[in-house]
Image 1: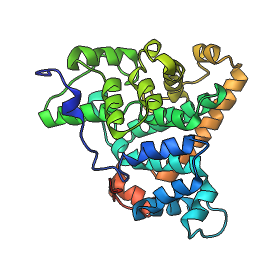
Image 2: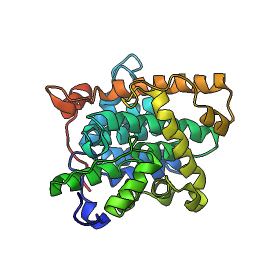
Image 3: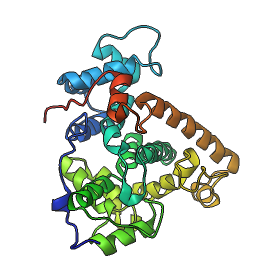
Length: 310
């Protein structure tokens, strides 16, 4: 059992496993979302570091994006991918190794957390387009909504302590309530605090912080509500091991909330499954292998665990 409550100050630490320093991600996100941003500024940010440049070039030349000829310059790579895709790819790959690790406290096996996070991000992006919200912001919220679990897991491991939750799905309100009872905080609060320290804006931090209490999100309530919708779609998009199989049919409550017909909802799910398969193929199989998740990413895209300079 936990000897004393956890605090954000104890949990916040740098993630050495990240290929990209987290501080660069909010800067990129803000620039991509701002229609007045000079494209040269984004290119200059990418050119600043060889690791990031290599990441984009290797991705542009992957089977999923290559136009049929080899791309040698970062300008051509960005033109091929587009600024929005560049940001999403960098963010997904930056966190892939961190999210590939098992989270025993939450009964998530290796790779399971990553798959659930990406599925949620893709669902958030799709929902944002439907409701006129920024899809890039929504994608980031969906991808990082559960990041606090990584920090809680690390702290418990450092203390040599274990916790067994009574509830199953890590995104359920019931889990958040158990966390509050045991730790004195929940993973939404931890993740949002970490993201704020990294420099993410309120439009991303607040929905993550209030994902279990959307009514407290103020001007960001809609995004906080969309997280709950997106999390309900995870089991429809992927077979994540919870309950054995993905949901066999449309979620009646979600269909009603989204004002979609069953046929429309099914089309959305099919599209999201295709997008998820594309994302998983890009990063590679994040489940453990003899080489490990890090080696899989290096082999797939040709870059290592080098970090951007802060």
